[in-house]
Amino acid sequence: MGHADVVSRFPYEMAGWAARLHSMKLVSVPGLGVTLLGFAVRPPSPYADPRVRKGIAAAIDRIRLLPEEERKPSIPMDQFAPAGVFGHISGTSPAPPNLAESARLLAEAGFPGGRQLRLTFADTHADVGRALVKQLEAAGIRIAPEPLPQPDFYARFAADPPDLFLMSWAAGTGDGSDVLEALFHTPAGGLGTANRFGYSRPELDALVARAARTLDPAARRDALWAAFRLLAEDTPAIPLLLRSSLYAIRPDLEWTQSRNRRTRAVDLRPARR
Image 1 (cartoon, rainbow, N blue to C red):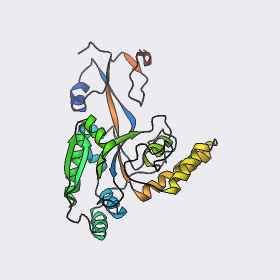
Image 2: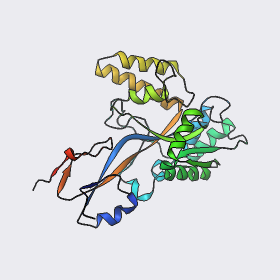
Image 3: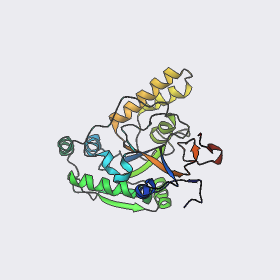
């Protein structure tokens, strides 16, 4: 203690202890990666019916997916582009859980139909994954957790995607097209390289293409907004959370925080007195 200028990814479970110390200050920084629940949307997946996906979404209390000490600095999400990313739709917020609506939609769809259901996630998402399983069980949706070491999860995601999975994805350049092009575009021509949902909608592909060839910022924004609204309608994945990274910093330093989780010495400077 006292031998480091900055500690990155400081554990939230130690935040209460650290906050009582004069030898460090804590800073939380929202990231860019949105944690999402993804579905295989093509038959014979049990999630092929959009009513099932929407029914599951209606059962989720996003903020309670996190450990209590992490809830305050994290942000429940209803879209894949967080604030500060071009294409974010401002003024929206996730709907609160509605178990009656969830039960109605699932009953209409005949879910789950006797299948063995499983939620696959990397061990880095174990806290959210297990909390999600408990929430769905409370709504009458029985799903077994399948945690995997992170390298194994991504190998499985690439080679044999599960029907139901938890992961994060970031608009790394700060533009919402990063998410649309990689995750939700129909795989073709170098696009849709991470589309493991089996999702394909020509209207969305056309909007992504329009955004890519448009220089006018307002027109690009409108194309991205329309694409994200199509995703909200089709629900191939449910945006859940924008988690924040926690840092411990020497109290006599100021730091320009970055949302890409990079910690650079050049961003540190003596605090103004």
